[in-house]
Image 1 (cartoon, rainbow, N blue to C red):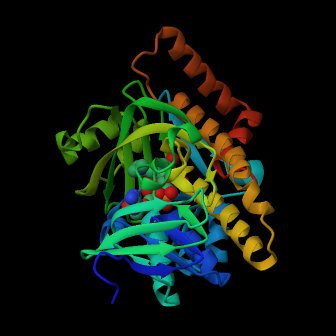
Image 2: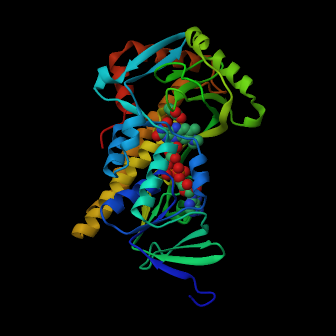
Image 3: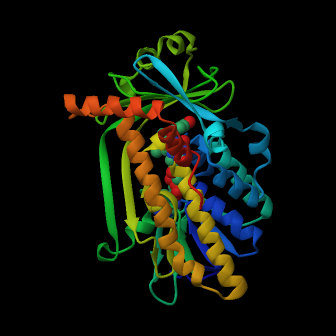
Length: 398
Ligand code: RFL
Ligand code: PHB
């Protein structure tokens, strides 16, 4: 027993803060490479699995999950989508990724990715601490990096070589870095997405991104029997103000006549509002602390990039740790921040552009509306413009 007042001491190579997709994927890639790690999460496993978020995986993400050895269910149950549809002016236009650039995306929910990663971690017998309270980071710019937390009233201290801050936008990792050491770039949009999940067949085979005078709408899915739909709402809106009927009526009003007719409605399983934000923290490394995923950057969900960027960061980070431990080569870790940020900013640009293209902005004047219409018309009439959308949507090369 540690004497009273002295925290329980643990030590590991990499202490990972946060058990979202970034933290769990990093943990699995390190475990596969034989690098000791611990995952420290403030919420319960049930809470982590109850968050309904992303649904679209780029090839890079699918490959990362394969490398981590957690792609069996994804291969069996994921839906390969070869394109998306854009809807405006009452007409739908298909963008055929496969024909344009020969690549696809996979529909497989973030909840399922997380569930698969949790199961693999448990099977590998790697340590995870859930419901850790008052997680704090220490001395990451010095010689003795540590992560401290309290669990069931007992204080713990984990000494490590490196800390991976994978604790999302509201986490403690980025907040632990002094303001003078980081630069923040941010845009908050004057609207959010009200989303529902329902046990109903999707309205179409592919996703429909709809731009309508009443606002943006998105028809997505989790499987052939489970749908995920979103409508743009003002920032101040509350989910409690939206009955299922009100949601379905609003969604239907923003779709083309054929989709509105085909829409199958049913009770919602989940209903919530997500604010839309673009955010980047530079750099992404501070001494032995590395930020990855939403801890370092946020994109509005319109381009389906958030989870995919998290996976891409984690691949660079895992490769950096592997080169460091196997070959004593720290060059990849030194390049981590610059490599990630180069890809992050391209995804930020694409997500901002998709958001600007498809949403109604409250302060937009008549000129802005005409420009938006012209951009949509140009997009669907130009193969070059469609190809540009396609290559960004399926994910830029790493
Ligand atoms: P997460 O998933 O937020 O996980 C962070 C974890 O850290 C924990 N945590 C802490 N742990 C310890 N100590 C602390 N002090 C802590 N503070 C927080 C949290 O409890 C949590 O478990 O971040 P991560 O791993 O970086 O993953 C990022 C993704 O979750 C996110 O980018 C995506 O969900 C974004 N996103 C989408 N991304 C896509 O690639 N494709 C999509 O189709 C897509 N759709 C979406 C989205 C996000 C949405 N919302 C709700 C924001 C749709 C929506 C509606
Ligand atoms: C989703 O299915 O939740 C989803 C799909 C595409 C997006 C955003 C969210 O662009």
